[in-house]
Length: 387
Ligand SMILES: Cc1cc2nc3c(=O)[nH]c(=O)nc-3n(C[C@H](O)[C@H](O)[C@H](O)COP(=O)(O)OP(=O)(O)OC[C@H]3O[C@@H](n4cnc5c(N)ncnc54)[C@H](O)[C@@H]3O)c2cc1C
Image 1 (cartoon, rainbow, N blue to C red):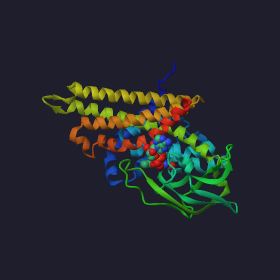
Image 2: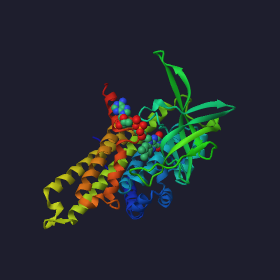
Image 3: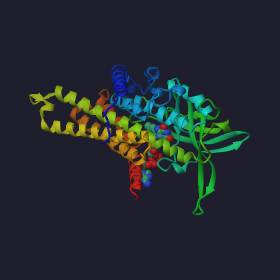
Image 4: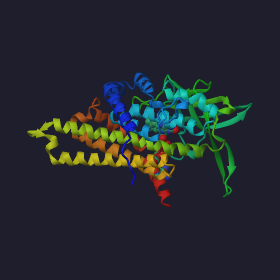
């Protein structure tokens, strides 16, 4: 029987992050959303709490936790503010995790303590204009020259890539070609660490997004960016396999964030349904509203079980790819569906940006797209079924 009872340590973590989310993050969420401003102060405080180092060993400045601890923190933050949650998720799962999983000891010593402290952020630059779901379409190139990699190309939609505290972006680039068994020529993709102060690296102006307005997202341009050969992350030509692994793990974290969003919509809807009067009674006394909120609670619960299961498999060293895809699929849809229903419960107020449910309504859509679209999750699940 799987046991999803939280340990005392995990319960303490949940309580601490919940209190921080309610008392520190929530009061400034609407302002940062409206101003499209990055919440530097909140991020600094999260750094002091150790949240950016949650799943990393203490020897690298981490908290010695694991994917489960990270997911619990993301769920609590995702409940109140998805922009802050994605900032943490991307910094840990996409920014620091590739260094931890595939870096040399020297690369880990150089980057992880800094990233785990939250004083610096890293991003992961995979997506390009012609390479989104089909990441094999990468066009950015890196060629060797005098002990360096010279990188040219561009990236789209890179989270945490242009803040004042961003220090590193790991980019994928074509470093060669090889002949496949069917005689076709395939690109060899590698991952390379690019410190953001390297000449030729540029974060272009931020996107004007529908949601996640307080998170940092930029296109990147790379023009003759020269970094030492030692900045190769992992094995040359294995970048594609490496980032697929990073994305598999990252999906558990995104699913946890989305579960938090789905739960946040339940909490807000319950509170409002008890307060709001119509036709002489609280709207929560009407079965039409009760059933809507009951269904929302069931969605959030299902999403939670799905990410717990995927995380438990990862930690037990069991196959988890399909379960992570299912968790991401279920939780992303739960967040979007719950945001739509919570907005309905709020009536006209649900359409006013300063209300949390309105933010969840705008923020949740990307949970069905980022870090692999719904369709990509379905492809992964179908593949696991042998289709
Ligand atoms: C706010 C934000 C933050 C992001 N952060 C990052 C980041 O930090 N790093 C990074 O590298 N990327 C990031 N991304 C990019 C994101 O991961 C991609 O947008 C996503 O993977 C989809 O790629 P695409 O936009 O090119 O869509 P496409 O791949 O062009 O897909 C378009 C549509 O076609 C569907 N589709 C594609 N192929 C198939 C198929 N074979 N069968 C059925 N349907 C299919 C897709 O599901 C989708 O609905 C971010 C995006 C956003 C908006």
